[in-house]
Image: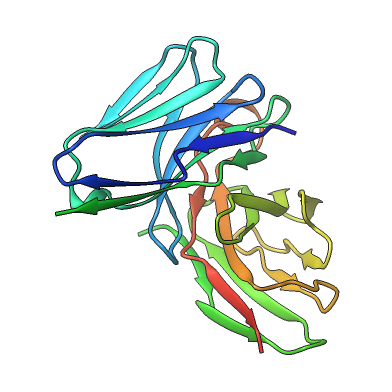
Length: 112
Length: 117
């Protein structure tokens, strides 16, 4: 099965600073989803990447999928308290889009 | 507004008891999923259903059962055979499993937290 490793496990960033989260796969990624979760709540869909080299942005969040399609990064510019939470990457397996594997998540804390 | 409703938000199970978690969606989605989330771990797939009256085991189906009698509903029963049921359970759905809609993102409910008494 596909293994997804997220790094870092957690990070503390001062408000206004940038941050980057990485998601690395042991196999080629056929679809990569980024979600955000607040503790004790469901997952909120952020972005989906499919093509090698693809980059998408929404407000101050940018996600990229590298050319080899084995790593994705999520970058937040000028972090705000609203960016605090757990960020998870999920990836589609080669034979079935429906069955997603998820990384363990990265907890982001934004300090004043 | 369309969405996924999970209930209850908190649930307690006694030894030897089966409990059922509810998941209802009004998004007209064909595919539905149940995940388990433990602290410091990612989501693990318990069961999934591609269409009404059909469902498949995920990676950790032992001790769980599901049904899919209606498109809108996909209840999960945690049986007494599940020896470590304490976890956060998430239900999700998306448009479909194959073809042009298969890569549509999964939408999630707000979860049910299950604990043992």
